[in-house]
Length: 487
Image (cartoon, rainbow, N blue to C red; front, side, top):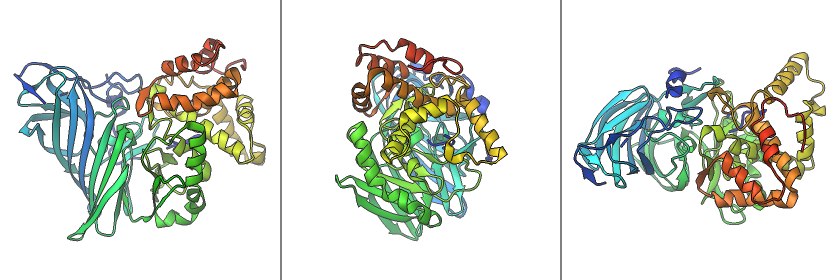
């Protein structure tokens, strides 16, 4: 996500922050077993996600009436039980559930807050694979995050802008809404005939019938729920391939086409450049979705897997940032929201490397300017209000350590981005360029399509150098306030 400086990426039905922060369920068995927990104990969002099972695959069948803003949907969720289950929970905010079936049998269900509790007719044995089908519908709701930003299913004049960080996916499909449970996806999305529905992965078919168009998308690599999208609108669509043959699908709202043209033309170049730094591109396709969003969307972009969604025309550096996330965040996904710096710090550092590549400041010069709380010389003529904003940004930079955001509203705060990138620059100085750029390739290769946390990253780096990195990470990743030393 990009928040510039890094800021992100007013709701009609806001999600209760208190609910999110408050501290499920093959082969059948007799009605024994235990209830799957409603929450995974995430340090920042403890009520997100659910225990007792892990999802293997989501099959989402969505029919959206753009004019009346009505969604009619069925979710088929294939999962494996991690314990004997008498019941289990799914995350779903709003919408009406009309029926739930487990392995084809009707199941009892109930709702409380954003939890859908399912009670199968028979219990589920540990290790069994089971299929849960949920029929649901209604008017999807936006969400207001702890930091005041808007996410989820956001209505636009010609459809919906769909983004899910950190919790918004549950506004449009039931699931295990935590980054540590990744799964493959199939999307079948039906919209009025003149509209386009864009989701993750590759377009398998597009069929027109009875005044409607149905788009079938397949996402074959594991994906966290917050990275899923099903954005709908009247888009100009271009398909192509990179020089290496990677399929590209780019959908742009006509209102944003002119401003988006040059940055998106560089997408193949950016993918090639980042592949040289970070290793083989981790997915089977790439692209972009550029929508024309309401003014209340106060962030720039989200790194939706294979196709980042942009809330307006992006500049080139934003495309660099979101595409770097395909390695850092999408393929290697943080285990908890506390580890978000492993996603945003790397994507910000990719921006710094790109600026140097384009003949601008080096990463060390970027670091120095931030450490000294200096303004860019090009912005030296800002007015007084902008000067005050710059001072506030500098204050925010040292407000909390990137490895310990502590509060939900800090999950995408300035230190996660800027100081996260500064950690990487300090690491580079400590281990040297050869070891550092090996880390940039070997880290996403080792944890490809899986999850990792900060301690795993620290151990990974320490194993690749004789330099003791303890003080570096203690001070720069976890230390409070502005560190008083540089490595």
